Amino acid sequence: MGKKVDNMKKWFFWFSIVLVSIIAYKMIDSLSGVFAAIKAFIGVLVPFIMAGVLAYLLYTPCRAIEEAYNIDKLKFLKKHRRGLSVFTVYFIIVTIIFIIVNFVSPAITKNVVELANKLPNFYKSAMEFLKTLPEDTFWSQLNIAEIVKSIEEFNISEVIIEWVSLENIGNYVKGIVGATNVIFDLFVIIVVSVYILLERKDIKNFVSNLMRAICEDEVYQKWINLYERTNNIFYKYISSQLLDGVIVGILTSIVMNIMGIEYATLLGIMIGLFNVIPYFGAIVAVVIAAVITIFTGGFTAALWMTIVVIIVQQVDANIINPRILGNSLNVSPILVIFSTTLGGAYFGVLGMFLGVPVAALIKIFILDFIKQKNEVNNRELEEEE
Image 1 (cartoon, rainbow, N blue to C red):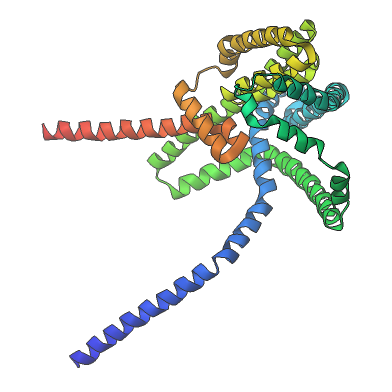
Image 2: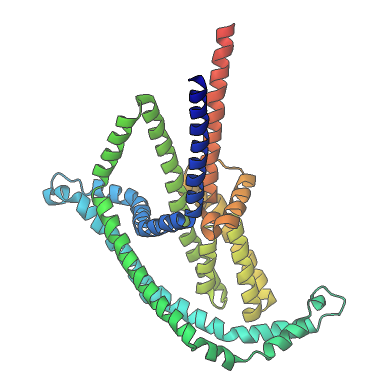
């Protein structure tokens, strides 16, 4: 009887091994389909995630305007203050977009077109200048003559024929369909973000009650504290960097227009956009603006432009930005450079932009962990004594 039981156990053991192996093989074999399904599901969720991000960015101004509408004497405003606050915020956004499209965009478009038309001349001038350099210089070793020859042999007609090929026409049709999907997603993002802002109190209460139901009070308080600190860091950093970029763009555009720099508006806006990226953005923007100014206004104009823009950036970094940001994120320059570099390497421009607040959050987690561990160790030492 004992042998039969042992045999049954062995049989059941090996049967289990075979069954688990088959299941594991089937799971691995179907991973591509599982990943494809997950990817498709995430694709469906993207507009809703973007709507949540948009509502998150607009939450604070909506709340401030809602409080401003809370006037006892004006009952209509007080009764409908939440809906009016959302309407006011989106009305301001639409007004800003209207101003940009009708007043700022034409000037930028004109500058871009003029600059694009002059690029061949800039390139030709640069090549002629490099050819005049001595043969033992670094630039002469880059085979510039061969590069110029290959460019001169460039056949534009072949490119045009390739553009109008049947394969590319199909790609163009796909592009149009993709643009239609983008418009639809944009519509979904706006509509969903409006509903989130209108129902923000109900959503907040639901999440709070859910956390209370599934967590102990101590854990719940820790999550609330973590949320408040995280929200403070992300919102303050993102909103301040965007506002700071707008201010820097306007200031540099005005200063460069006063100096008579060609394409001042375009270069100023570019510097403002790059300025939202810590450290690297400002450097890259100034270098690009200086190179363009060398071709359009000469070396002296580029030098003066660089000096003035650096002064504006220093004023921004030491006076304007700290006032906008309020309390500093308390992140060392080394960590800023490291997080910006790492974020850019793995997630592109968005990673460079969000690298600093993410690094600040990780720093908070580590410091909290160290503090908690030290408290536990000190408590144990006191008990031993």
